[in-house]
Image (cartoon, rainbow, N blue to C red; front, side, top):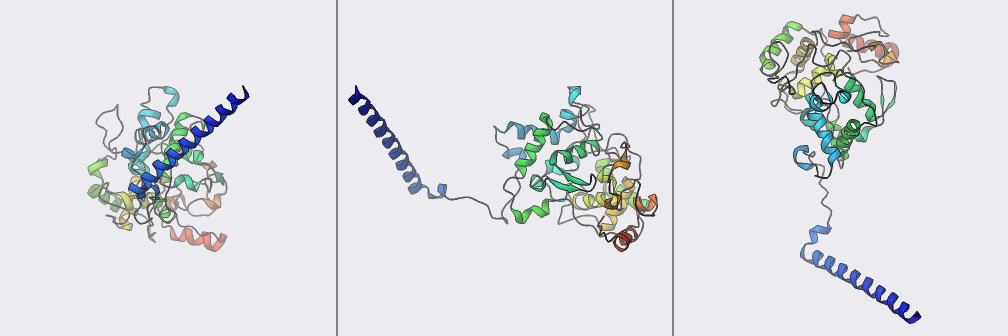
Length: 339
């Protein structure tokens, strides 16, 4: 009996050695016939490009795929058109990609590329270190004019999974260009709504229409081009309601499919005036905006609602000129502001 056990153990060892030998032999054959398969294919920063969510999401990454769908079809899956009333978190029919263009992959449009790598981060609006989930809910309550999603919800987990996927393997040398917006030289004069209307008529009505309500041929579908004012758009607490932020977005991205980060179609001044014109119209009002920026010193100078720690008028905070406000903060409080 003991001999049988020893023979059985020896047979098992021989089989294991044989299997290992076969694996080594196969690896050597692959190395001989295709040595590149064992060499890292890491792309250089210069040749790197963002992932394409339309083609690159693996079939088994179902949560990432769902996050992508939420971003491009927000109204359908988590807004007013959602079949389940319990997941109607967005209060308007915008899609996340109306601001974060092409599902968050475009430079100069607050891209999602690399965004997961920047959280947690300090946010002046809340005056604390914030998580990515909290930042997403900030958009839900402002740009989407809705309500916060539970952080444990499938929708929140899916959007974060999608952002995490877009943030994988982004070269450190390229992250900065996908962060935020382009710079706009701030004029030393008040924004002119008449000039802004002229720019709007010449450059914007082809998509957003003269009444600013965009294109939506089917009321049961998302907007083809989003409304810029009225009841079905971002509320007055959104970052896009600050004309310096809106001007930065417009400069890099509008007219849509024509302007780019490095080849804008509008001048800084044109973007400034048209941003003011767009934000001169009525839109939904966010509740309790006074609670924003607990430390009022951190409030952007172009925040159009008070209170402020300075004595400049509400009109000037909305339409400028902004340099005198910026200079006051630096001189009186030692705070350097850029918008």
